Each structure stands twice: as structure tokens, then as C-alpha cells.
Image (cartoon, rainbow, N blue to C red; front, side):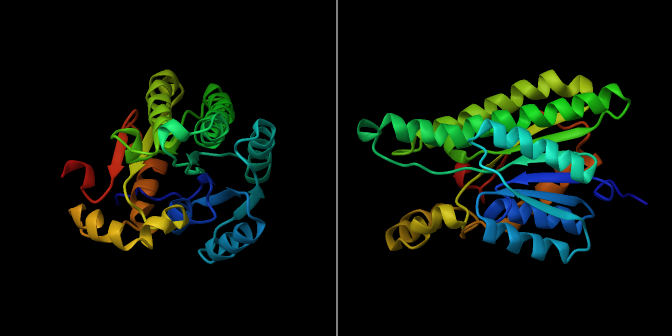
Length: 258
């Protein structure tokens, strides 16, 4: 029987996993048998996500972690490994927006966006890589690192230079790590979502002009949903993707192709 998508025995850690795309991915992985660790900065949302994920009968833990704080990431990864025994898949999903006209953009805003969207991924992946490399040296060479980037990182995102630059950076980081970490059985991939209905895009969702002018240009003719990312999450966490690394998966309803 073909069971490469069975995640039983695996542990997945999802940053920003208490809502939106992160929770959609965590939910699918839990349904497929994975135990889950959620990082988020909102205690109430963390608690709610733990409750919903435990309904699938898996071990679930949550921790308040701001990925823009290096020590919190280091401590959070140690805690996850100590509680769960291992971490097999890490999804660096936590991110923030920060749109502004380029000539008006402040240095503080630029750095704030990159602190979460780029530095946070760097620290999260670095600490996860240490763990996965140690496991590989002990004969357990298997791991998956996934970063949720954005189509803003591959196309011109007007008034979104800081955000687009941060997302382009992490896609490049993933490609570099894919080459560097493959010898340890660790594969590294990125996901570039298009227009997805989450809290981050609430302004656009409630904008009649945006819904009239932009969303009809999406070949799928709708906003994306968090659950649209469940399949790719399970695939990248599973043994089915054991030879798939260094790739950017564009999930945008065809928007960048039109």
C-alpha cells in the first residue's frame, strides 16, 4: 500500500501557526498524523489553535515566540525538541506586511519588516538545521525546512518594496540551504502564495475596487484560502518529497501566469 503521505511519527513546527495559512498547513499535517508545535505571539489564538488541532488526536504544543527575537527562537526550538523528542519539519510562516510609498518609507519600517520576514526565518532555520544535522550524524538523515514567501518576491509589488525584498531574500536563502543541507538529508523549499484571504489581507478583501479590478484577474476567479495550502504542507513534510528540494511552489490560482 502506498503511504508516503502518512506523517505518523513526525513532528512539525509551524511559526505563525495560530491562524491563516500557518494554521491551514498545521491542520492538514495533524490530520495526516503529525504531532504539531505552534509558535505565535497571541496567547488567545495559540490556545484556540491547540484546541482545534488536538481534535485530530495528535500531540499539540504552543509557545509564545516572536521570531524577530533571536533568543526567543533559540529557546523555542530547544523547548520544542525537549517536549516532542524531535522536529522533522519546520514551516517558517510567520510574517508581517509593511506597505508604504518607497520615497516615504522609513528605515524603521524597512527594518521591522525584515526582522520578522527575513531575520526570523534565518534564526528559525538555523536552529532547526542544527538539530537535523545532529540527527543525520547519528544515522537519522531526514528533515524538511519550508518557508512561506510570497509572489511579491518574484513580481513587482508597488508600495511593497520592503515586503517584496524580504520575501525574495528568503526564497534565495532556501535555494542556498537546499544545496548546503542536502548531504544531511534535509530538503529546503519555499512557497509563494498569491492573494489569500487572511488577516494580513483584510484591507484588500474589504476594498470594493480591489475585488472588482484585481481578483477577477486571478484565473481561479477567487481569493485563495488557508486550506489551499494543506496539500503542499503534507507533501513537503512527507517522505513523498524526499528528492524534492530547492524549489519555489507558486500557489496563486494562476495569477502570476496571466
